[in-house]
Structures are given as structure tokens and as C-alpha cells.
Amino acid sequence: MVELNRVKNQRLVELAAFLQEFKSVLGSVLVLTSGIFGLLISFLVGTMSISVNSSDRVCENGIQHVELLPATNDVHGGVIVDMKDAMDAQHFLTLLRASISQWRREGKKGVWIKLPIELVNLVETAVKEGFRYHHAEPHYLMLVYWIPETTNTLPANASHRVSVGAIVVNDKKEMLVVQEKSGRFQGTGVWKIPTGVVDEGEDIFKAAVREVKEETGVSSQCLSIYILFLSYLVVYVTNILV
Image (cartoon, rainbow, N blue to C red; front, side, top):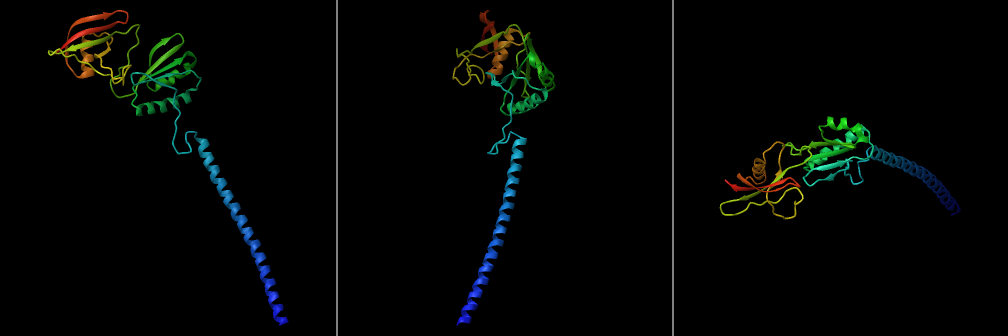
């Protein structure tokens, strides 16, 4: 009986020693695994940090934000860029190309860039991208660009502008009116007579007929001048449908 107890005690001692050794080995493996896992996480986080820092256009939600030139919308479906801050030509070129691409996707038309005399270093870059001179004042230069592949309707620079408005009446005494797709009355629900700008060197009567045709598709014939506002050089012409 004593011998049996001694054997049991020896087995228990050996089992305890084995468990202690197994515990030490297992702890080492866990520490090693944890260390490797930690290094792997650090590597992945570091890689992600490098990717984000290399391009500040990537957000956490995966949406790409591209830096554009500061611009405001005009009432004719275009944009106006009023440059004020100093910028090197290469950075300006990057922003300009990204902006034109974005504005083209948005369906914008004319682009006006106002460059103060302090940013004369950007003129050549803009011109090489298709911009042209519009007008210049003592302290700034205005450049323009037409985005869509349609007829450029940006007005030429001048000391004045002549506009026409056509009163079109048919044989039923019905008057033709329109709602603007662009301009100050866009989205207001206001009905108005067809209006527009007289092209350089264009006859006033022909301008009235052209504007009616462009805005409504209606052919008309100009009969007489109804009223002339000299202060604004706006001519209203009476027309009767053909």
C-alpha cells in the first residue's frame, strides 16, 4: 500500500512537471504569436498611413475628393474664378485641369478667370490650356474658356452692350412669352418676352429675329422698333409671326 502511494505520488510529480513545462512552452508560443501579430498589424497600419499621406484626396469612406480652383457660379451656367492667393504654375495647372474636368461633368459652359497682376506667372499656363484673353484692366487680366463643344456664346469685350427684346404677336393677338433656362429669372416661374444680346456688327432687327428663333424655334419678321432705352442700350422690337 505504501509502495502504491509512492508510485502515485511520483506520477503526480511527473505530471505537474510536464504541465509546468507545457505552460512555459505555450506561453512562449503565445508571446511569439502575439508579437508576430502585432508586427503584422503595425505593418498594415503603416502601409495604410503611407497610402493616405501620399494622397490627401482619399477619405476614410473611400470617396475621392479632388482639390479644385475656388469658383462661384454665374447666372448663365458658367463659373467665375477670382484668383487671389499666390500659387506656382505647376500647382495651378493641376487644379485647373481637375476643375475643367469637374465643370464639364456638371455641364458648365463659360469659365472666367480673373488674374490679378501679382499672378502674371499663371497667364502662360492658362493660355496653353485653351484660355484666351477677354479684357484687361490696370490691376487684373480676365481670361475665358468655353467648355462644351457648341458655339461659344461668351460676349466679346466692349465699352457697352446692346440687348434686344422681341414682342411677338400672331394673327390671333396672342403674344409669345418664354421662361429662362439660365439667367436671373431661372427657376422663378416668371414669363417674359424673348431677349438677348446683339452680336458685334449685327443689325438690331436681325438680332431680334435671331433671338426669337434661338429661344423658341419660332420664325418671325421684324416690323418696327417699339421703344429704345438709351441708358441701358436695350432695344425692344415689335414682331409679327410669319
